[in-house]
Structure formats: C-alpha cells, structure tokens
Image (cartoon, rainbow, N blue to C red):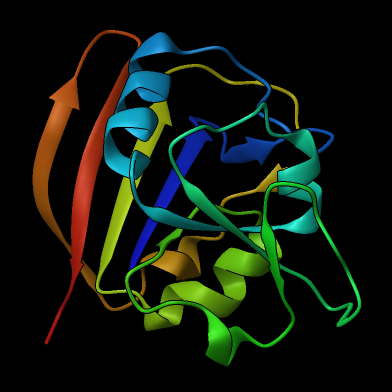
Amino acid sequence: MIAIVARSENGVIGLDGGLPWRCKGDLHFFKRTTMDRKIVVGRTTFEGLPPLKGREIFVLTRNPNARFEGAVAISDSADVPADAIICGGASVYDLMIPRCDQLLLTTIKKEVEGDTFFNPRWLDGFELEEVIEETEDYSIVSYRRSV
C-alpha cells in the first residue's frame, strides 16, 4: 500500500477539507500516480475533492450506513484494498500509514494557513528512497518502509 501526502513547509496538509495552495506540479504528480488506481480518502477529504475521473474511490468512514455518489463507502480499515493509494485526510493517514510500504511526500516550499497538519510520526519506520522531482516551488520524495 502507498500513501501520498502534500504538505507546506510549516506542516499544513489541509484547510477546510481541501488544499490551501495551488501547485500544478504536485497536481500533475498526483494525477499521474493515482490514475487508473484505487484511492482511499476520508469523508471530509472526499467532500473537498473535485471530480476525480479514472480512479476507483473508496471513502473510509466511521458510519457503516454512509453512501457516496461516485465512491464506495467502507467502514472497516481491514476492507481497504491492499493495492490502494491512501490520499488523506489526517485521520485516514493516522490509521493507514502504518500499513503502507511507501510514502510519497510533496513539500510545497511556502508557509500557509491551515487546520490540518502533517504528523512527523507518519515517517516512523521509513527511509528516504529517492528525490523524484525538485523545483524552486516544491519537492517530491519517496520513502520506503525500512525492513
């Protein structure tokens, strides 16, 4: 399983269920990485997403009776597909990153206001694998679970 996370330099990952920045390079990377794949998000993140064509979306929710248009609701993390990409929010990352083998991390090179933050513990057990892309505006790196 893979997690994909974007954060600002001051650790913000979200604001009001969405991203508090616009970064074309990160959006292109997200699209390339998730296209034709299964992705898992929480309810708040799902509600803040634009339509994501070409992906099978699973919404991890505490409500076993929840229904989402264009997505499959799952209320037990054991039902998350093993080949899924975990896409947030924070509570989904808290629950699922310990089960991931790879973490793809974009750092937006600016400080922004937000209400949801990157938890440094999410990197516990991971080692830097490679720098995928580096520009003056952002960097994208891959971490692998250490053995």
